[in-house]
Amino acid sequence: MTPDGRLATHRNNKLFAFDEVRDALRAHTQYDRGLTEVPIDKIVGSVGRYHDFDRAFLPRQTKTRERWQNIDLASYAEVSLPPVELYQVGEVYFVKDGTHRVSVARQRGLEFIDAYVIEVLAPVPIASADALEALLQNVLPLACSLLCSFLSTL
Image 1 (cartoon, helix red, strand yellow):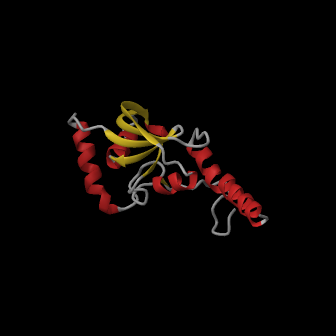
Image 2 (cartoon, helix red, strand yellow):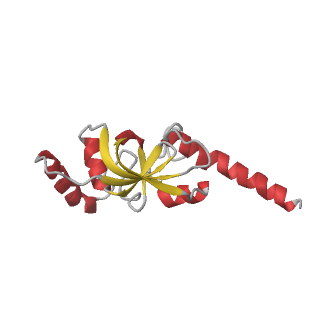
Image 3 (cartoon, helix red, strand yellow):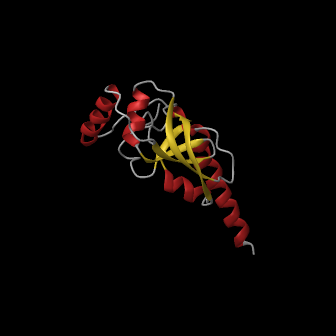
C-alpha cells in the first residue's frame, strides 16, 4: 500500500502528453505515413487533450460529456466521421485531432480506427505504454544524470 492507501501496483492512469514525450526523447524528425488503420489499444496519449481523458480514454470532466455524447450518437446513426489524426512514436500513438472519436470507438469495443498518421522517429524502440512509462521514469533520468556527471569532469 502507498501512503495514500492505494495498492503499490496501481498504474498511472493519465494519458501521455505528446510534447513532453517528444521533448524527452529528443524526437523531432517526422514524416507523413498517410491514411492507415491503427489499433486503438496502441493510442496512449494526446497532443492537447491529455488532461481531459484517462488512459482508457474515458472523459475525466463533465464539460466533455456533451461532445462525447454527440460523437457517440453519430456513430450509432452510422454517420461517417472523418479519420482521426495521430502522431506515431515507436509503436504507440498520440491523438493530434479526434480524441472524442477515439474515446467513443474504444468504449464501443472497436479494435481499429482510421487515422492520418505522422510518424516521429524515436531514438529507441517503444513497443507499449508500459515501455514508454518505464523509459520516461527510469532510463532517461539515469542517462541525463550520467551525461551531466561526465560533462562535469571535462
